[in-house]
Length: 227
Image (cartoon, rainbow, N blue to C red; front, side, top):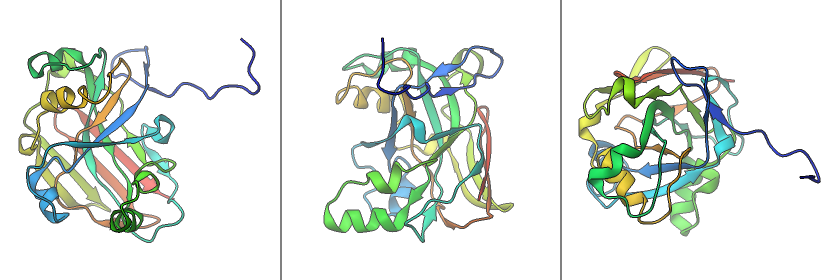
């Protein structure tokens, strides 16, 4: 096939212990999936799950240097467990959902919080607050065949060595299986889809030069520097 210009390269993630790469299709995110974070954002502690998206090319595989984005004075971090799907479908039953999971990673949902607040006030979309360039640093994937399906374990983030976010996967309002099942009622999920599953309390504002280090027990760690 001829193109009017070369197509963008496929976004891929490394897989721990494998030379094969994981091709990314879509990136979904769950809002307010930890009660303590929902409370700090002024929301009900267990509202039904809601979703937003990031472009696949907003991911920063492996972390490293991340450019501080323009048009914001309040960039904030959200450390998250990320689910990578190897199978998909529509109207997936919760009891069948984990069979769709290929593996897990650690992700950062970077957010231009001031833009998000203004969008909320006006009833506008969040796209420019959540889906900007390099807004999704992510670690290599750990296959579920190796690590299982974690339902407990620490999830944490440090800024310049100081602990800012600390929680446990067991504190999710909606489990991974419930999230997959619910999301599949809205869209047909497919292999290559990623789901950022929400963040615990403790989000804070970061600036150029800050070093962010986070992790999920049994899954991995991620480190970025804002430049």
